[in-house]
Length: 172
Image (cartoon, rainbow, N blue to C red; front, side):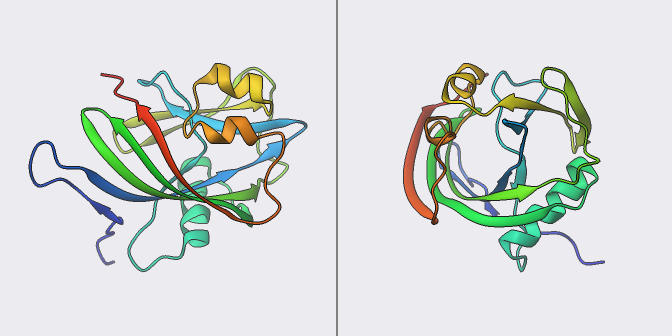
C-alpha cells in the first residue's frame, strides 16, 4: 500500500503560513445539522478532513466519513468553495475548503442534545453531535467558518465561491 500524502504544505520556518485542502460535509436530520470537534478544543466544525493527493473531493468526503463515522455517506451537491484564512495554534493557515451536502444512513444515531458518536482520529479524540440548524444555535456553538452559521437557514442553490477571513482562532 502506498503511503498516504495529504494535500498540505507545512511551514518550513516559524512564522510561515500553512496551506491545506479540506473537504467537509453538512448532514441534516429533523432540523439539525451534524457537527464535530476535537475534545481538547472549545469550538465545533463540520465533519470532514484533508484531501489526499490524487483523490477527488467527493471521494475524500466519503473516505473521511467512513474513517470518522464508520458509515458510507451519499455526497450531494457542492455548497461552497472557500479560500479560508485564519490563525490556529500559533500558525497562519490558508485553507482551500470544499463544502458539500451529504446524506447519512438512517442507521446513524440521532439525539437532539447528546454526543452521538466518538472516534479517535490520530492523536485527537473527536466527538459528534447534532446541533439545531439555526443561525442562533450555530452562533452559540462557535463554529468556523462563521459564514456558514449566517447562511444555515438559507443554503445556496448553486455553488458559491468565497474568500473568507475568520480572524484569530488561536485557542492555545
